[in-house]
Length: 518
Picture: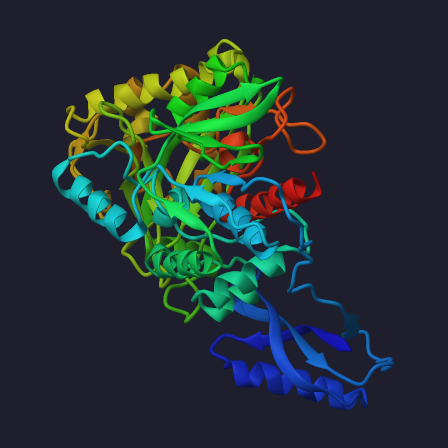
């Protein structure tokens, strides 16, 4: 049996061996015989700047029937594996999209004995990286191979964050799977685990190779362009406007930026509903400033600091989102003539700046309460940002303090922009709706009171952030199939049922199991 030793406090600068030794001492003091100690969870308590410390939980094995007489020691059951039923489906399933949702759906189906056809409109991760870096350097955009589209999904060029507020034991299976394919082992126990875009690319390639060895057929540069429907059931799909493929189980893991696919679904009368999302800008500061604000001083030997800020106004909320400690702001555009940004960090999180989205809630009534209205809302302001930046994919930027004063910026202070491309000074109110501008100003003043210098220092705002989540929901029933269309399984972020790598991976697993239970 396993036990967990909890609430082990360690000072800054400790080693893993010291953590294990502390757990072993607690076990000895309780007269428990145990072996195979390993760290299960780590967090940082920085509430008191003069007493910052780590808190650990450690797993160990002990004889069955052991009853520890210590409040720090509890029995424990961990789910590392996943019970996948072995089924013989009549037709090969199809998975569209190679983000985390699609990858884990394909992984589960392959382990069930039903390796799917896995299609991805973009390129493999190596070719995709070349295309992205060329775009950042020269402004040459490839609409199907960019930060949004390609192997690994949008998360490949982000922070590789693996935290989620969902409580699901299958998260351990996902984490162990990532480690199996090359992710650092510390993601198994860190409180806010992340892989980093530099390491995530190799993890994805390793997972792809495993899928191929399990019999999955993978096709890149292959786009779902139509559905074939018979008697309110999926009977086939059309790829690249030319190839018809028989299909009775289609997992649609398209991501939140497949706007042409949404349009096709609407034309095929797939049930879509408008959904709230969030939009705004990115703010960046010196990494050392954020560390000092969160820890009380710099260079403590602690992980690069992050923050989470929320302001609930009378009409709107403003909050930080997808914070990237020690990261950069990237051009995440996927359509000609439209500019959208995102944040990215490598595993070390040691870039000069730290950045975060500052976003405001957007409601369906803000864009006409129609299923495709949110897309047009996003497109409108992404185009305005493109124009404001000079129509060459330069990003419009403004110092946060000048944004508050409603005046243009003339020079940078101590913070230099990290954007992967050119930047141009502009007034960001000209590429944002007035309600977002107003809420951002209220939020920034609130955050200034919480973190001195956050808004009135040299922080830089970059616009615009519009792709926080899907602006619509491909509604599904209790069997996870599209309402009124049997055999179509909308899944992940693009369907409106996830928000990040972990939740998308979980939804991919859940959806694959629903296909097997059909």
